[in-house]
Amino acid sequence: CKSDAQRLDVFNGLLLAAHWDAAFDAFLVSFDAEGRAVPSPKLSEAAALALGLAEAPQLILAADHIGPLAWHRERLITQV
Image 1 (cartoon, rainbow, N blue to C red):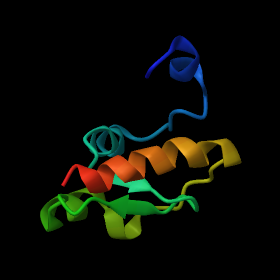
Image 2 (cartoon, rainbow, N blue to C red):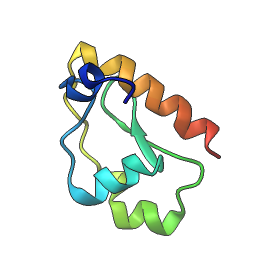
Image 3 (cartoon, rainbow, N blue to C red):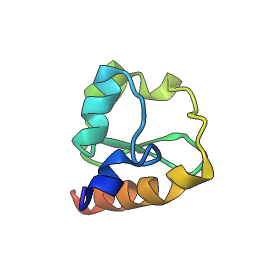
Image 4 (cartoon, rainbow, N blue to C red):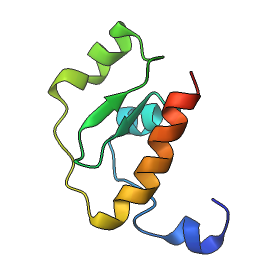
């Protein structure tokens, strides 16, 4: 985060299970504007299976989540 305000912004974070949080922080998975999981091209088939990617529930997001998630998805793709 670039500032304390950004760090403390409740829409600049998601409450995820530990395994999803680790995958999100490692840019192995993100979420689209509708809250559906988006895998990185780097995510192996075995990791996607272990994560339960195919059965991942859709997140309920607020409109203010869209910007930070767009930033995250952009990095998910460029980190390949």
